[in-house]
Amino acid sequence: MDFLKLFLRGISLLPSLVQSLEALYGAKSGAQKKDAALAIVSSSINMADAVSSRQIADAPKFTAGLTLIVDGVVECLNASLWAKP
Image (cartoon, rainbow, N blue to C red; front, side, top):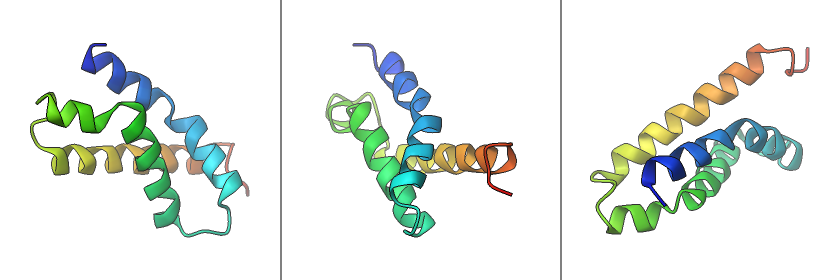
């Protein structure tokens, strides 16, 4: 499958994934929840395959970008009505 399609599919999972991780790991730290989210999204877009086939040229930079996206989703959810008062 085209890498862009896989990437967008993985990113589209983030809001529901963040909510699910919050429910499952509520007592865990934010960093632990973020690590879990990154692991799930990375595997859903087959990051290892993308790196080996050179669709991702700089894996650390790609992971840093995913981290920013996860942080952004969490920030949006926390600022929305979804967040607990």
